[in-house]
Image (cartoon, rainbow, N blue to C red; front, side):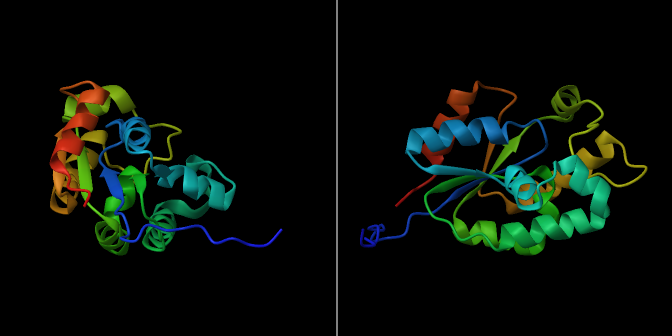
Length: 178
């Protein structure tokens, strides 16, 4: 059978990237948003796990925090996608090259939750592959990351104040997709 190239969009469609704390709903909303748009979805945590053949926690345990963050930044900064909802790991915000690349691919949406909701949903973060430095509390992590997310975001949606489908509606109302 001969190779037939697939027709691509005449105008390249952007991606939509979801950033935020662990427990904010990036994977859940990513799936709903991708389905609504009839786009693909990439979860960067699952991508890292697939690339290394290890769970996030095993990657963290094997390579340590600093190398984990370098791995994440490299893999995300090399993404070349269109028409994809990208659900990121919470620590992607520490990688300036990754953030730059995500913004080049399309709008970045912060899925925002308050500190109490973050702690309630994530607990102590044990066995989640949570990129947290030694001696830091969950409160420290929240307060460290939130300004970075806000700086990167083109749109903020509070996922602790409405149902997932309503959050998807808010995203689609505020993002221009050409």
